[in-house]
Amino acid sequence: MSLIAVVDYGMGNLRSVDKALEHVARAGQEVRITSDANEIAAADRVVFPGQGAARDCMRELEQRNLIEPVRQAASEKPFLGICMGLQVLMAHSEENEGVDCMGLYPGEVRFFGKVLNKSTTAVPLKIPHMGWNNVTQTISHPLWHGIRQGSRFYFVHSYYVDPVDEAIVAGETEYDVVFTSAIACDNVFAVQFHPEKSAADGLQLLKNFTGWDGN
Image 1 (cartoon, one colour):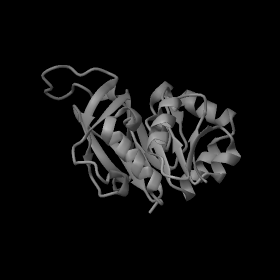
Image 2 (image 1 turned 120 degrees about the vertical axis):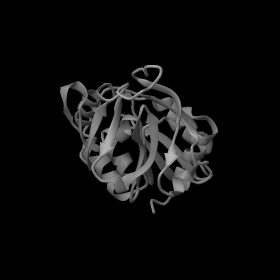
Image 3 (image 1 turned 90 degrees about the vertical axis):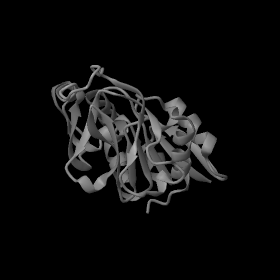
Image 4 (image 1 turned 45 degrees about the vertical axis):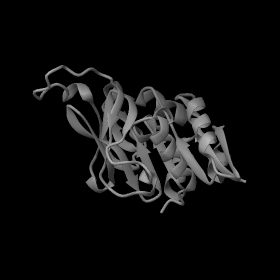
């Protein structure tokens, strides 16, 4: 039996992620929500979902002794980050007056309020960025297989990642400004949108993950 571990740190839309993964799981795969470091270490694939604030996320990860297990998983096995599960991979977030994150990748998590509606947008855009929006695939990647260029995914967020290394950007989205909506680096793929809420294309991305070997 192959295990897909969904990291439980007391936050996030875990049940909908779990159900979506179960829907697309392949024969012989088990999906399990867990906060057990040993189960995360033993898993064949790890999904790190999340919602809420960066400070709360980092606090819960620390209290549950999950920072190192998650960091280790991201270094050695197929790893999918979703929403907050993307943002906390960066070095630092502007949220909550500044929060140090996991630091897997150099970069900042920035507040939309500092950049939104600075252009000639006819109708002022709201924060959070919520609803369906297009994703431009900036690289070819196994997790984009079967998903058309410019497909729409569901977003709910007030902050966006700004990685130092542009080479890890795998997708971009425009919301008054163009921001990074997906990154890919070796065995890690992480997205700002919610594939579990994104209908057929979201399920396709999750299905692609269940068959991805991290290369």
